[in-house]
Length: 223
Ligand code: CA
Image 1 (cartoon, rainbow, N blue to C red):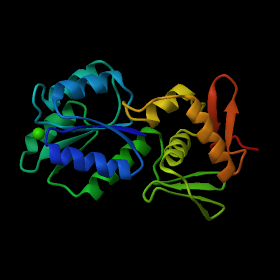
Image 2: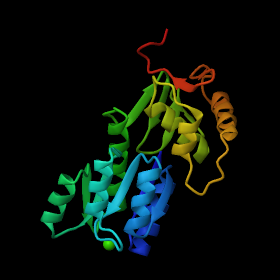
Image 3: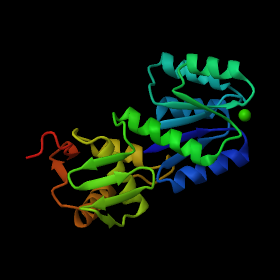
Image 4: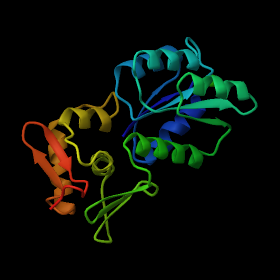
């Protein structure tokens, strides 16, 4: 999952990027409204954290323009605690959730997880596929009840496929959702990571769909 943080407070921006990175997400960030707007317009994100008071372009305008352009990714706005009207304006502009400053990072991470799984059509924080279980809260994976140790890139890849199980996910989509903007993106590395996941998990879990990508079965159509 890839997240965009738009926040002009440098300390808060850094804290968000660090906490989200530790939480298993690929994170891009912007310090002003124009850059943030451009990134959200051109790159695919699974969630955007959007401060409302920003230099160059304010958060409400950014959100309104994205929504007008049919950019539908989940957006969580950061608002001032005492300004209820800001929350109303933000939600009406198309925000999916808000969090008032100052906030606990744990609360923000929980809201991000909720948006990611809702967008993918999951109501529970634990996602299962066969005997493999992904706990999005602790970023842990078990197979037949045994914990599986994954590197951060392996976890990101598995989490994306599990959130989108049942459908074919192309390598391009994986590259776009697993790596930061500045990362040297080579879609061959996806194959390497798939190979590693197959060694650590039941090998039939991830199906290769020739020429199209990969698919995990959601259980409903499994034999
Ligand atoms: Ca601000």
